[in-house]
Image (cartoon, rainbow, N blue to C red; front, side, top):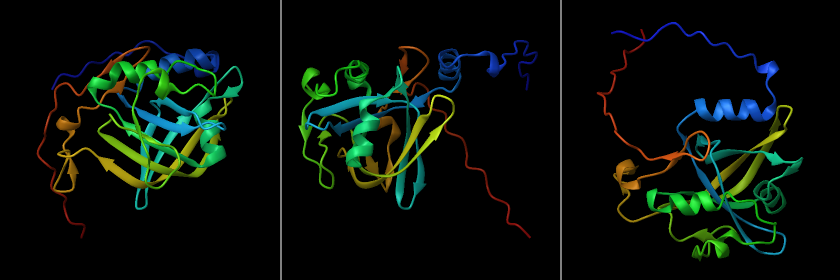
Amino acid sequence: MNLPTGLTMQIRPEELGAEEAYKLLTGMVVPRPIAWITTLSATGSVNVAPFSAFTFVSPKPPMVAVSIGHKAGVYKDTAQNILRSEEYVVHIADQPLIEAVHGSAVEYPPDVSEAEVLGLETIASEKVAPPRLAAPPVAMECRFRSCIEFGETRSRLIVGEVLMFHVRDGLARNGKIDTLELNPICRLGGPNYATLGEVVTLTAIAQTPKS
């Protein structure tokens, strides 16, 4: 197997500003799943925004984490809404929703509903006050559990427990999600997105029992 060698560029993190480091990391750590989150503002408007620093952190109870930063020293509406109300909904968007996801990244005033601006239909949630979006194939109703701030920029890692899963009919088979059927979108560096593309299936590696 011939592997590429000879990495030559060295970049010192201490010489980078926050924005420069952000651009570098978001171009390297790819592809990233997108948490498309609905929250309620203090006046009841439905806020919708995408975040690509997103993963799950626990299967039992199911918990997901998303990192939310700020602009000009002010934390984004989603973080403020979650910490105030402690309830939100995380969606996984599929390819037909790519333009709506991108459009929801626009910074609107806190009391402007992105759901209304983008014409996104909402449905009442079962366990939390913020509604879920009707179009995405997956929605997870969440309750806030923990918040940790990191780095000089004080980005907030918000962890929530999933109280209810909503899964489009046909996606779950034998307890597993059909990823090809889900057809999720992901974030790359800059205003760039991608879909699954080629999927490679390998043979499971047998585990050798420990003596």
